[in-house]
Length: 574
Image 1 (cartoon, rainbow, N blue to C red):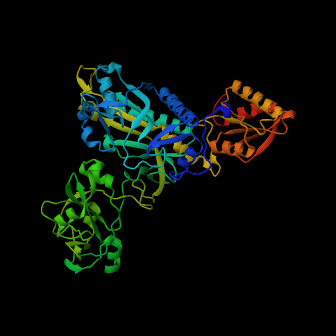
Image 2: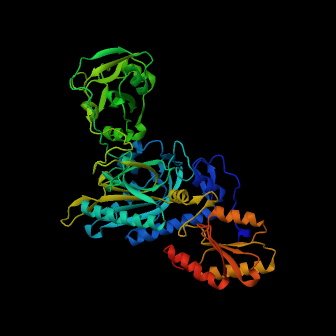
Image 3: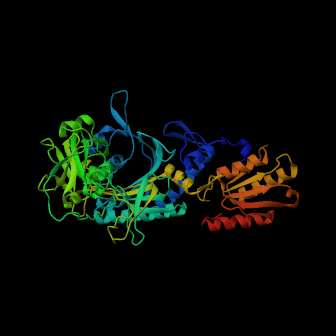
């Protein structure tokens, strides 16, 4: 492609709306443009990279035995009603009506649709196992779209679904997809971890996430350097050892604590440690008050709370002042487990029950209670683990300290079981002629998010530094002076030669200053850089890689060999 003809509107300044490197650089490099918040167009360079990522995904999915199809983004309400997700998926679902008032959604995911597709077509165990996938645009009405392609309202995703006769078959399909994902993200040169994930609204009991490691990632990974344990912070089990500060249960006392509301203020007031306190949090769950208690030195994990309650995340929110006063009789900051309004649901993390002589809110403005003990002074529903993991917690597998790091979720895999096949009546006849529900798995790769993740891991102060496999073009030829006949002719010759070899090549034949050309090629990040300059008449060019500061002069006859070496090192063939 000649750059003089190319639509590549690069920007010199960092857009004010862009907060993280991938967002900034994809905008500056003329690869994406925002239409409205969370909705982007992919310009020619950006779309080429999208297609490169899609191709790697297709090759590995096909190799794993999955078959590609394409389904509609528009899905009728009836499908989602059958699975129970029309109501509980939440406000992220785009809902619409046709001219006849029939309700639809723009698909945020496709479990129901795929299940409905196969249920009338696959009737015998002899037709199983089956694995189908698509690469398609998804829609989620994010409350706060941000970070460019990281969290959009419209995004490109690969989703696959496996159908098996039993759990063993599902687990085998799950492992095949795991292996395929390993191959995908390894080929794309991403530094990633596979971690246990929360199944959330998807259903099922087991899921894993593929996290591209990045300081700007929205996800947090807890992992152990001494064993293979790794999980998201939402999923990670917390090993919390309570410390004994008193051997006997003391008599409960009422203590005046005017304007002392926070844990830090209480620590100073009572002259003790955070772990002595029982932190009581009030939530509104589907409009009803729920009080949750955790040790004072830890934070509540709202995902674990939602799972304990069997509620969707959007159905849980912090209670307002009026609800707090209604169940406690006190202002915010003085809530505790003793003397709550009758009928108020109280959920207690198990570790709270093991701490003697707690300090808790007194359910009276400006008062706390000390020497409060579970069982004697209050009771409630006990949850095994409602805590958020922190750096240094003991690994639940080997006991060594855990580490935390941030990551970008680029892929996920779920063992769905029969959640969708049962609810949608999707069955087959087994070897004995009995009807049984399909046992399913679900597998997603965020195509557009993966592009952003690659940029986060491959950039510097000059711009993007694409790995060869994902680069929009493999090589760029920069003609220093396009008005110089010898340089222009050699540039054209090299362009024809590389193109004939199968090297995807940009020819910068623009009538621009050489500094502009060099800055643009570094910004857009094409891996192989070829400069045609003053020695063009001698058949000498400058060869360099975007990933290195080394530049060398070589003769034209050596160029093909050098590029073949670059391809071989990247695991690609010309």
